Structures are given as C-alpha cells and as structure tokens.
Length: 230
Image (tube, rainbow, N blue to C red):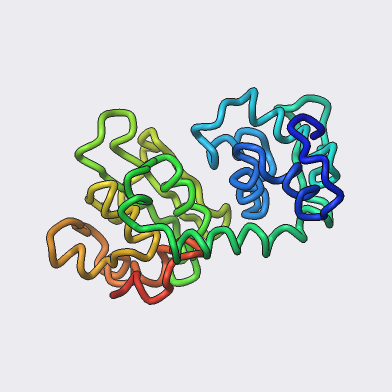
C-alpha cells in the first residue's frame, strides 16, 4: 500500500491509499454483497484479471479489511473484518452518488450480461415464487453465443443458481429482451410494463410468474424502487 503514497497524515489521504487503487471499491462492493469465494468474486468483477484480483485481496488483507481462510489465493474464503464491514456506507454512498449524478446514457454504454445476470441472481426474491423449483430462461437474441442464453434456477430448498448452459429442466418462464433494456430495468432507469408495451421485452410461460415479476425480480440496490412495475 506504500506505492503511490500521498505521504500525508490526513485520514482522507491515508484511507485513499487503501481504497483508491483500481478495482478496489468494486471488489469491496462484491464482498459486501456476500461473495466470499474467489470464483464468485470473479463472477462479480468479470473484467478484472485473476492476477489483479488476487493482488487486491492480498492488499485488503494486509490493510486489515479482509481475512482469508484456506492456504491458497483461489481456495478457502474471504471475509470482511469489522473494519471492512464499516466500509459498507462508504461503498453505498459511491453507488448512490453515481446513480444520481452520472448520466444514464453513459452508464448504459458499459453493458455486461454476465455481471447483470450475476447481480439479478443475487437480488432475486424467492418469497413470492412457487414452493417448487422455478426455471426462468433469459434470452438476449442480439448477443452472440455463449452469452445469449441464461437460466435462473430458483429452489426454495437450495436457493438460487445461475447457469449459462442449459441445465436440462423444463422452463417455467421465458424472458426475451435486449441487454440494454434489461440493464436499464435492473438499474431503475426503465420498467417492465413500459418495456412490454414497447415490445422490447416479452414474457412467455407461467402467467403467475409473469404477472408477479415486479415482486420477485429484484433491482440494483441503487435503483429507484418504484421503477420495476412502472
């Protein structure tokens, strides 16, 4: 953490030496969201190289923000220390500021289907869904394989899983849309009802799942909560 030091006693400068390196705040977002294993963290920061991810985790461990269990960087789990958990409001403030002040046109220039689907899996609310397993197949026709098709498997016993390869189960609901529309809905910049009216989103299959999508498909924690249903 000494490389690029500001060499100032000011607590802001000292904290910036820990938090302002590239990818660190985004990595903290993933840790605060509950990811603990190396591969899960990679899915939350898919454009971050494994080598850099490993280095940032070591930096955060040295700073007392993260503690690691296991012998190797890709084994075991990474957990936030009390100092790490205390950064929650800081990271949330970053997100709320970005949602409020960064123009949505700029945000929607950086589309990433893997990150979007991982975030949707994490925030999905299974409570209003059927008591048996539900399979939701998301289709993005404009994307190339293997990014075109994704499956969310929601099981009240084992939780929610995300697949990019057909899991072989009957599909309960098909969600067909383009990546920009789904990202905008997730961010609270668009809503399901308007996207359906404009024929940018189609829901095919179980009527109850389609009708209640506004209750089970969670939004980004920074989104306007009223945006999903419209």
